[in-house]
Amino acid sequence: MIKNADEKNLNGLARSVSDLAERARKNKLKPDEITGGTFTITNFGLSIILPAHQSSNQPQVAILGTARAIKENSSCD
Image (cartoon, rainbow, N blue to C red; front, top):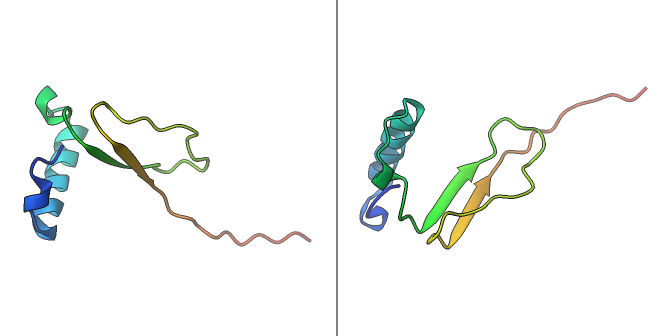
């Protein structure tokens, strides 16, 4: 969770996200760093099929899922 995100500029947000992601990969986050958020941004990773359900953690008000569409060239002869 990025605390006081509304007070940070884009570079500050990027540094906070990078720090959180690195510590999350190493399982170094503390409980108070993953609770109490108001909004979640997530991605669907490398899965081809998008998950059918995303849920927010209370008291969060919303979750935004991001993905990327990739055009594949296929020939059907």
